[in-house]
Image (cartoon, rainbow, N blue to C red):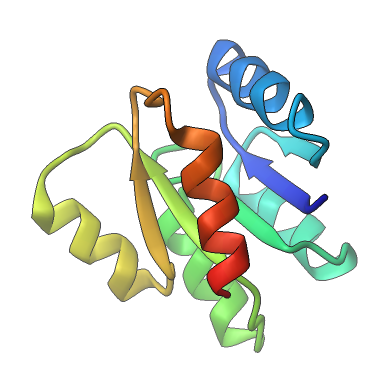
Length: 119
């Protein structure tokens, strides 16, 4: 079981991801924007942060950069609707360890668990 912080502004997607991951016995905390993710990541102990890249208040790129600047060493994975390689590269350059694309695929849980295991 992993403790996961989900930063996602779309409530439907957040509910779906939370349901799918909790069915695999993971604990999921949800925040709705990058600023909340930035604050929560510093106070909680997470095995993984799933970071939407396009959110209000503070986007995932800025939140990830700020976390890395503060010395956050944990696993951060971008979750993005963009399949363009430039956007994936931008997420990696921001400090994300990897990327997952939306729409969420059928093997999403397996991919999340593989990322956690590899970290």
